[in-house]
Length: 234
Ligand code: SF4
Image (cartoon, rainbow, N blue to C red; front, side, top):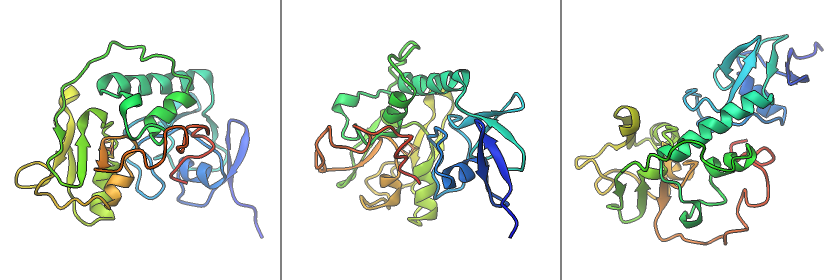
């Protein structure tokens, strides 16, 4: 039987199947490339750029780049991780992420990536943007200040829940999550607290109501384990 084709990730051989992306092959091999808008259950969109790697001096998103034999992929270079940290810091200042008050703390991918990348401060001037909270639904809460525009809820609502409740609209700092309902709020939308669109949200932007501190802070997914050891989407 012939050996599978391989490429190198930071010097390590990674086997891949035809049609796999670099990210898919890396995850299948049990290795890790930091990522935020990618999820193994969904087609990649390459928007957050956190999974960017370098191939022959060119920066590409590993979630969209097809694997091919002989590639030499750099991921853990200090300058690549510094740029990833800057992206995470930008997301922190473009929203209002008050981790100690957020029910998602310890389960949040944004926070966990900040820990993983050694983020000690936000580096940039905080924007303190004004984004509307939508608490109109009896069971679901949307805090747009915590939204990182990853579009995972958009994809999950459309492809898993079969509802198409969410979309991204606007420009620049005014870009935000839109609701597909007559009022434009969650109240008369088709969303439910059990939707995949909620459980897949990597931050505390979309959360079920009345579920506070079921798991105490300090005992949550990333409280003691680095996200590289336990990425939730693999
Ligand atoms: Fe992503 Fe959550 Fe914002 Fe949806 S609400 S775009 S899942 S961060």
